[in-house]
Image (cartoon, rainbow, N blue to C red; front, top):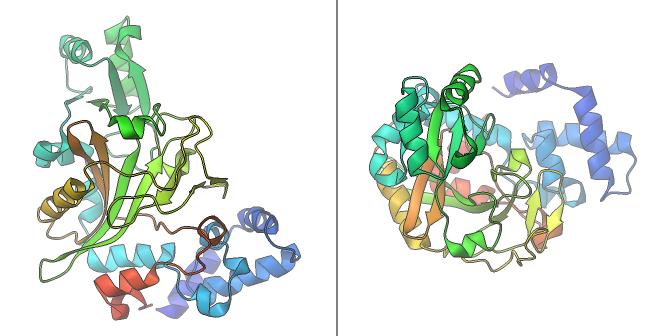
Length: 338
């Protein structure tokens, strides 16, 4: 398995991307770029670490004993394949079916633009001042747009354009809690909670994250957003970081201090995820996305292949990662197997 892993990494090696990432590392390291690239390749082999993992988590500045403590994306992707059933991807990427199956937890109205009539679409818009359009089987925030209903004058043409662009899932935009609106009001800032339900039925919360928008209408890390880690009470532990390794002690748009933000209704978020996990018996390892409305949490979606979230040492001052939390929840024999 180790040989197969190394062969696969070598086959997918992108020299241009590797060089670009090495120059990002150069911002915090005095080492020459060739030395950085050599270290990135070594960590890929030694710690099963993605190249972006190396950059985002300041691995260059860490000692070997500290490097061994970090969960990595290759490990997480393997956990998805090992723990979750083969149909997990299809099961959770069908967003329409997910909204049907979890209707009592999503707390929002939606329609299928591909099957709804123009009159049904017009009625939907009349009930919701803002709507979100997305692919019915997308991921990573790709293909998502938000519309002001009052600005849509030709509903038939608009609906036809959505169908042509494969943005057929229309949902009302949830109003978020005032506390999170104060952080950044132009996106719904969500909690990502990574969990594992063990064979005995106990749910383990491995990591909780607050994802915050930054200049866009969605909060995804891959779409320009930022994140910070939460403690077990739902309080932000550190400043936020984005994909380019920028650190934000305050939000650049609102001036809100990130560390210390408390997510409202966090105990109810845990209760919701605990209940939702029982409905996915063949998908025990899940990354849940939850919005916080003025009335409580609302389930957005479940991800069978959640990204890994850990706070970079230059933002947190802590030089160790969260690999121990995955081992404690799932078992070291599974997490470390290659």
